[in-house]
Amino acid sequence: MLKNIIKKFFSVPVSAVKNVRSASGEFLLKKTDFGLVRVEFSVIKKISERALRSVKGIQESELFVEKLSVANPFKVKLTATLLEGYSAPRISEAVDKAINNALKENLQLEFYVPVDVKIREIVQVVTKRRRVR
Image 1 (cartoon, rainbow, N blue to C red):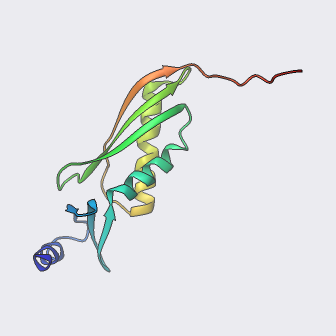
Image 2: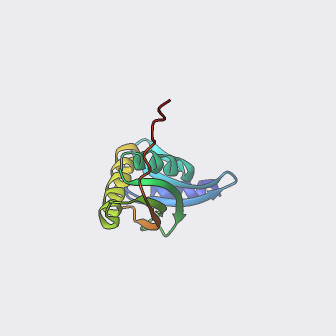
Image 3: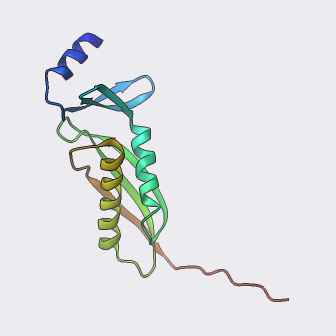
């Protein structure tokens, strides 16, 4: 079976990417000039979470990586709590750019990764008061 998978990947262009499921979970197979690279979806999730830290205006977030098709192997789904005073469309655009840039930089992906952003709620910015004695 492994031979069939390897033959299949070596008969397609260098930019070919495929989703595969293993005992450890979902992963992405990418053919490069040096062979096949296996990237677990958990790694994609960690890269995306790290990219989220650069976006201001998000207080809390939950991130999931969802399997799609061969053309678009996966998408990122984000549910976030937004801070008051920040625009939901601008935050969504910033999240999309940050995640796609991080994935392109770290994994050399040649395709666009769809990012679905769902705003759970908008909360007030709470400033900590200093207690004076």
